[in-house]
Image 1 (cartoon, rainbow, N blue to C red):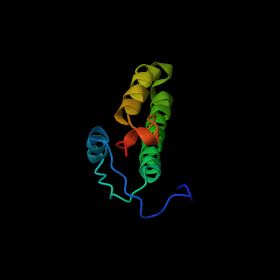
Image 2 (tube, one colour; image 1 turned 180 degrees about the vertical axis):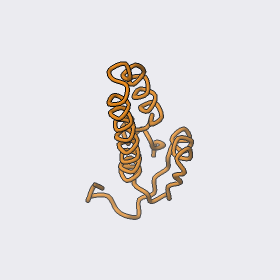
Image 3 (cartoon, helix red, strand yellow; image 1 turned 90 degrees about the vertical axis):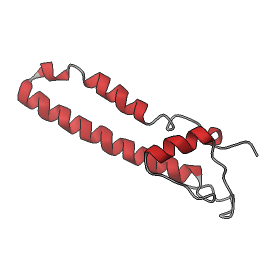
Length: 97
């Protein structure tokens, strides 16, 4: 949720490396797009992908047994690495004012 104390007219200047990461997902924020809104979108996308991965894993384990677990942790780590902005504090997404 966006902070109520901030004006809708605020302009946010995202760091170049943040822009590059966002563009990988097809996200091009407007200067007035609050970073929290973008993080929420990225987090929703991550959750969708992690749930999909878990569903695939459960299905594999039903079909192949416990040996299907081999490599699952690596897939989870790879998925986390696909979203490097999520653990970064929002203030570190922006250029210093």
